[in-house]
Image 1 (cartoon, rainbow over the protein chains, first blue to last red):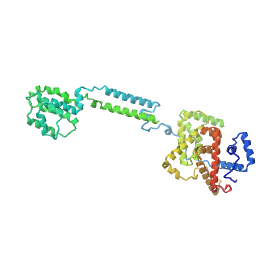
Image 2: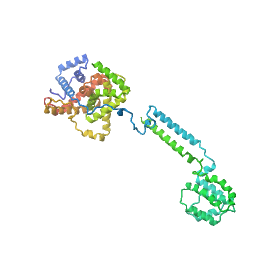
Image 3: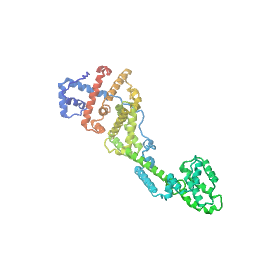
Image 4: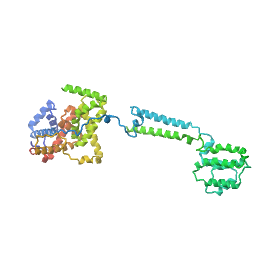
Length: 276
Length: 199
């Protein structure tokens, strides 16, 4: 066979018919046209022969044995245990509607937590005051009219006296003038307080608020009865974030965490849905 | 005989659609050689073809509920060819992953169904011609390659090819014609590798 690289068929349409002609996939009209052209053109006959040879070579390509069987096992077709982090079935089972169920569950969780937070009793003014240590200090400093305490506080400049502690001392002193401690006693108290390790302002109020009334009330037995105002002042002092059960930051923290978890689940689910 | 085979295949398809892996594996055993050979000729690489084939059967099993009748062979081969092209596109996008495949030799020494009557010299010449033909197939555009492999290598009819590629018969004819002309031209460009009588 001689293969002409540049045959010159009569028309491109006739050349297009060569391939289906080899497969007997031409109509009678096309066959007649092509066979007529073949009798007229040697080049077209050569092209037909070259195509016929090409097809024969391609047909002779050997079959290749598969390197392994491609049968599937139950493990291949079972749902995968490990899925992407954004796939709902990993979190909420494998049922077809698990995605919707998961979304609804997470949404309800978020709504429930928001409702729980909104319906929290946010307490009275004392709790609000206690939420802001600076305003507490201002308010207490207005109430405190006792002069010796600030003076004594100046003697220990490295250690700041807690406002709650200051109030306790002042209240106790005002309530029981006879039980007012002497200046050396106050010095001892301040030094004792100064000897304690430094703590953040928010954490320092609670332990110190409880200790001073005891120390101040101990000197005389008569102080016990006259210390009643001290007890009435205690709610203000104990309304710190770490001491009152009604204070929202402490109580609502688990709710906030649960809410955040629900929110994260919801966002992850939405992302997974969008991804699909 | 053919009718019983078709009935048997119909039953297996029904069972596979109901989730029977055993029934589907019967279909796999029937078509795995055809599927692998198509994948091999389309991809030009044994390992890639095996991977594509395995993935295709898995896809087919998971998509059995979408099979609405007609030629199961055509339906399966459509999945195979689409999977092959997905993998080819993936390798084009990430060539580093397929470096091993690219460096793999193109010879067909193992795995072929050897003709033991051939002399060693004849075998060598035939191997060279086969490699050249595979190179000619590899240089074809994707759409023409599929049609050529299905028609001239796997001997599917025009109608079956039209079902596989989901195109009308006229498209099959024109693609096949262009593919054959391209392969012929490629072979003429490498005359020195053709058998002596064809140079």
